[in-house]
Length: 334
Image 1 (cartoon, rainbow, N blue to C red):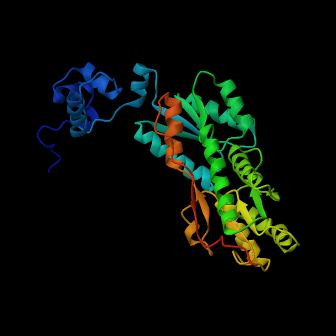
Image 2: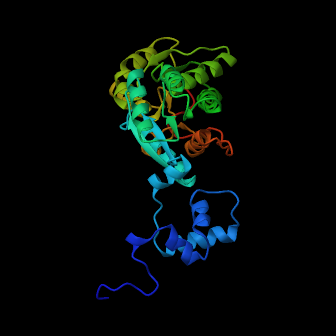
Image 3: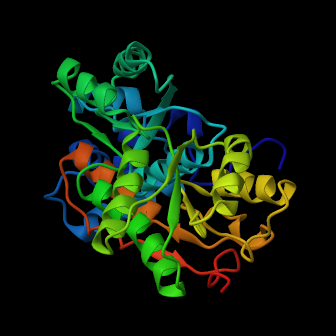
């Protein structure tokens, strides 16, 4: 093409609001209103401006827009451990939900056990001018501290309020599934007690068993497969003891995976000797051996709810939790 531009094209580096307005046949003020999602723009005008922006390869200058609107259209996300399945997919779900809402995310990682670390992460996000903050897998104390310190921006968490209830309902589904299979002695491999998600899941297990007049033996974990494996010796001893559990609900799939491997090393088979149910339905759960029975949460819906909360909007509620039955849970022997 000998370096020449196509007729009618403008050098992208020189494209601004004025050029978009000229191409769309509208005023620069109208273009600005479209860029900033002004509600009183006729649909046909909006489409014409968007078409001109696409044709000219116009890129919205987010910093410039922030000066005019006092918003960066950016949502801050505080995550704890990218190596864990929950936080990793949570960030991805929030990024997608933000994109659907024409927003961006800025992510800061913090030590979830350390309130000061979480507060520092929030300060770093505030320095970037975020419009609100979503916390992944929060501790109750850290979340309360954030809300107290940052009163001038919306702060929410991925699983609070009704989201907490859905976590609890999901764990109760795991218990009810095992109960329907004939298990009457059900144990729980719990997540960290000071994480809200772990507490919700433990509440669900305990409350579902209480309905049947039963209680759970419980072991503490930290979400990791290695911890599930490390607890397998104690679980195996309990299973072999008279009146021991015939099934275990693990607080997440990673611990369930480690537990199954550790039980095998201890000479027990799943589900022949003990059934195991996880939580999260991670993409690998169907390929565990045995394939893992687990609980699926509408993570995309929870992310949309969190993004809407910091925007001051409302969206359709997330779907209910779903029990995904696979081979790791079966009726007890005898």
